[in-house]
Image (cartoon, rainbow, N blue to C red; front, side, top):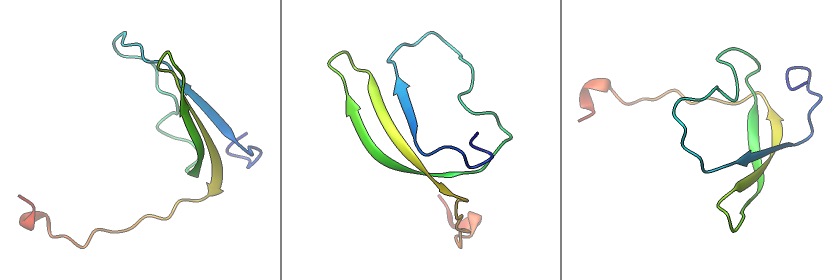
Length: 71
């Protein structure tokens, strides 16, 4: 649905549980979409709830820093 621009809003719930390595939320390949954070809140049990709106293709900036100048 995201690849076909059929998503108006993504709601992401994050539970604070450490179990080891988990599965990826999004695959390495797939649609490349910029997301705007609409709202974010945390429950009393530490669960975070974020709402995102897709903005289309992301814009990337090319670094002008020479890697040799980085400490």
